[in-house]
Image (cartoon, rainbow, N blue to C red; front, side):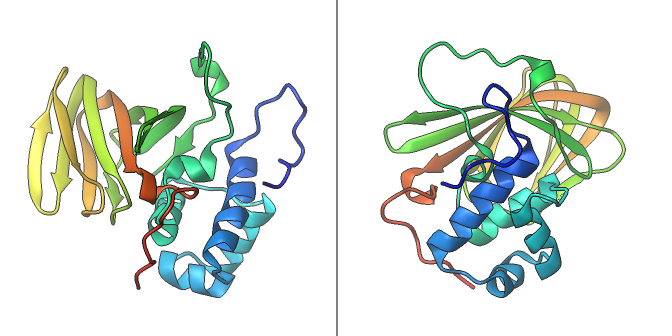
Length: 206
């Protein structure tokens, strides 16, 4: 893996820097040109160049589109922390990844047998729905406060504090705050073959 740019030894790299390094590695591992990745992800070639150079401004929509196009776990694009030992993540120390209607703070990647879990602190704001065309993995959400509407492939459920929902994240889905802000815990679950370093990896589909 390339070195993370402009980062001191005791300073956590930014989402922008992590994405730049990991995106270059993922695209290289898949043997995709910028033009082909642009076609698959729907992200402009100039924007992809900026992201790989560490000068872009990634959003939730951008990261999820890249995850879908490359068929890799989101943490393969954003993660840098070593595993093992006691892990404490302070809220103020984690950069927020902002989307249309959701703020995500990546907290932890957990590897167990043939599965990987990514843990996020998720806040669904009340200003707009958060929509996704789908990406690899299974989403698990536990609502802590507020009211949340989840729509998956045309089916809608309303959730309150303590409620839980899980679904195939490859399906188009959206989150809408009914009583904002909605604080929740999001877990993304992947199989080993949905990871960048998994063996084997599924063939990319058009």
